[in-house]
Length: 302
Image 1 (cartoon, helix red, strand yellow):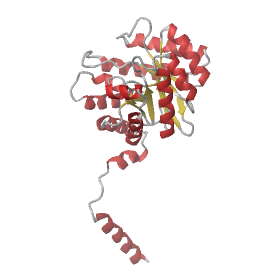
Image 2 (spheres, one colour; image 1 turned 90 degrees about the horizontal axis):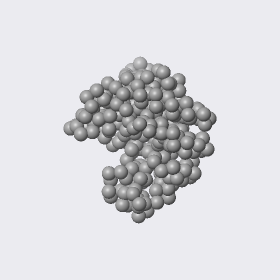
Image 3 (cartoon, helix red, strand yellow; image 1 turned 45 degrees about the horizontal axis):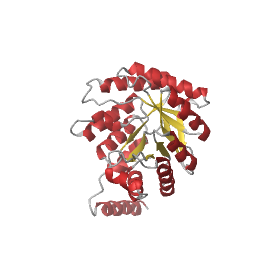
Image 4 (spheres, helix red, strand yellow; image 1 turned 90 degrees about the vertical axis):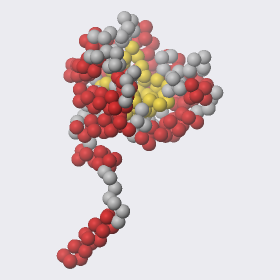
């Protein structure tokens, strides 16, 4: 089994086919969040702090940190946010940027083994990102598109993922440190998007032997009841072999889909986490009555 191990200074998280599904909290991202972007640009990270703590409390095992703000000093902001979040929580981080200087700034201050988000199959991108991954001993998300763009053909996307894995190995980066994003398409626009990506996830697991992740909310884009659709997709993706997702843990339907998927996959022994989360408390007074009954039986036996 392929294990992708990421860590903070004190805690490891293992992404793997025989492991519980890893939830990477997506909230620390100013894209589409004007207030957060404005605050981060001014050096106000109070919302970053509250988002980090809320996502961990909701069940995220890792956090994605992005500081993509137009005209701002992204390397400086990303490094400061990485340091802040690492002071708040021991969860490992995904350092997320399309700017190489920002990735290096985040990696240079990170304590542990980070997940870098991301590298694509474009040769120019491979040549600048993969040396960083090797230098800092990180793992990396490999997005399955290249110079030709994003193919709707899942077999073409498989070949791009395979190319990235092979090029990474040329740099001395093991396959276990590559987490492939198969690129989830919106099912509302492409009717066979679900079937195609599940086919690709299975191939990535069975033929390439790599762990996978995705931006789960892409699947439901443009649809009503997006959270219900995301939950259905995530559970089925887990069955096909997906091992992690970048998603919002504050949404209950998605979390229920993931927790249920862990039960079905045998990654929640005795359904312990499911029962702890969802078992209704005993009616008031009933627990005390049951305890007194047990004590009475013990006295009679004595």
